[in-house]
Image (tube, rainbow, N blue to C red; front, side):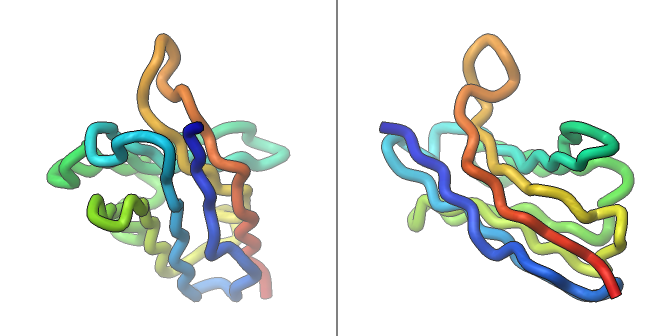
Length: 118
């Protein structure tokens, strides 16, 4: 059974940092590209970042470039998102998702809440 379990969310002040983790199991993690996607009540689902299976290629939405870093440890079957200089508009539920299937993503985690507020 494919499982993706996010952790690391929380409440942080503007300008602060958080590191999200996504523990993967039930599939060959190193064979799949992965993404972080976030959801806010006002904006709906937003793609945040992606990384290829080997970790050599990363992409980011413009609003997080230079502040967020996606990475992965294939030996630990874990995906990460380091988030620095957080802004209130980064407040969202963050999901990790496996790239695959007819739609961009075929499996999602349960999400972790990130709240940026003073």
